[in-house]
Length: 312
Ligand SMILES: [Zn+2]
Image (tube, rainbow, N blue to C red; front, top):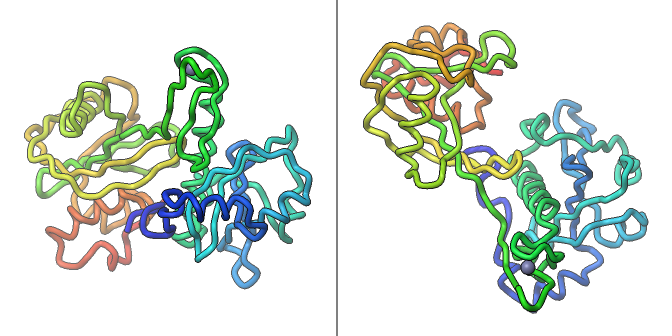
């Protein structure tokens, strides 16, 4: 399963008006607070390299007196109603008031230290709070937007307008290009040495996913591709993407870097990867799973069992 995905949450709550109304009054409902896009987490006592999400109850958060945005219903998490909530104080609140050792952290940096269900929940909450923050006003008439009870629609407060907006996703493709024996991986200049990954980019209006795959690969590397096949997807709420993973077969070999998005791109064999160069993306990422899918299709033993393979 890819990172930030899976059945970590029962989303049916927002379609049940009665239960949703009750959840909005439930003092024990769990809150997923975000402050300036940062998630509330704490280190596990037994293993400080692992993190847990800190989910204060509604009553606890209200008692803290912190200024908050409107709660956005997410669903049932571990059987309890759960809401995302923006903490709106200018300065960072004292995280320790919620749990010993708690801190506000950037999910992008710490997501892999959480268990999969909590990582998914924090990612979902982060995306919803970002959407609310960036859509305060109607795009048609400029009046203030109001959040519907479900938390999944914004309606313009100007009765003559009534324009509705829904959470938006920006689709992005990510593709493992191969020629059978070798895989095409690229790197950005800001990355640590030896870090390489699959080619990725946003889908543009007027394009199919397949069009976007072919265009992005051509723009970034000048390689032409065919046999574009869907593999799997991964939410990427930084701030609002959905990564759609593909494999594609190259019909050309010569790499030309001309749009400056990549510092380098090259062909790597399975032997290169087994030897630890390049360093691959984290195991939970769709990028890794695409590389693994290709690798395992032509290797004597699976990538996951290669002792020399290296990851970020
Ligand atoms: Zn309006």
